[in-house]
Every structure is written in structure tokens, then in C-alpha cells.
Image 1 (spheres, rainbow, N blue to C red):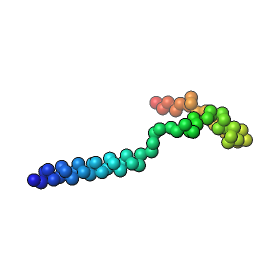
Image 2: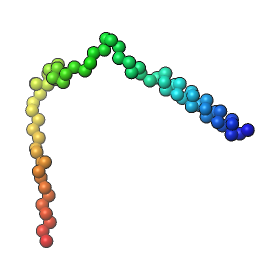
Image 3: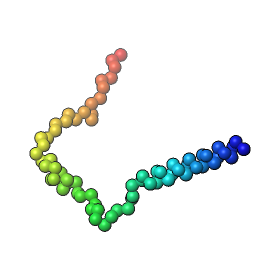
Length: 70
């Protein structure tokens, strides 16, 4: 009698959890008024990224450690 009761409680808890999760999941359908992502160049122009200073980076792609001397 103990095992069927535990199984029933677990089944009800699982059903309640899935119902709660499904009710809070955002819809994946795209409405007709939703536009696609604009091109990256348009986003840069809108954010005025041309006014930012150039960032200088030191290229260390070919820096090797010196070999130990014996």
C-alpha cells in the first residue's frame, strides 16, 4: 500500500511541474509584426561606433618561451 501511494504522489508532482513550466514558457511563434535582425553594419551606424578610438592590441600570437639552457 505504501509504494502505490508514493507513485501517485510522484505522478501528481510531475504533472503539476510540467504544467507550471509550460505555462511560463515564452511562445516560439513569431508574429507578423516582428522584424528580422538588422544587418550588423546598420547596428554599428545607429550606435555611432565610428566615433570610438581605435584600440591598439599587441600581437603575441608568435611569442614562444625560451628553451631552458642545459
